[in-house]
Length: 42
Image: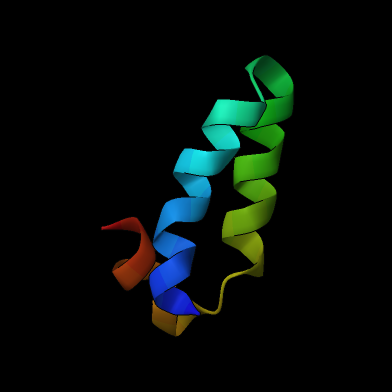
């Protein structure tokens, strides 16, 4: 699942924009366990 999570940011950017995008990206990052943060967002 973490491998797929690397693409979620890209998919989100295709759908949302502006404040909604920024808010959703923060929400997604907060839900990801700390051990996967580096792998997904490097």
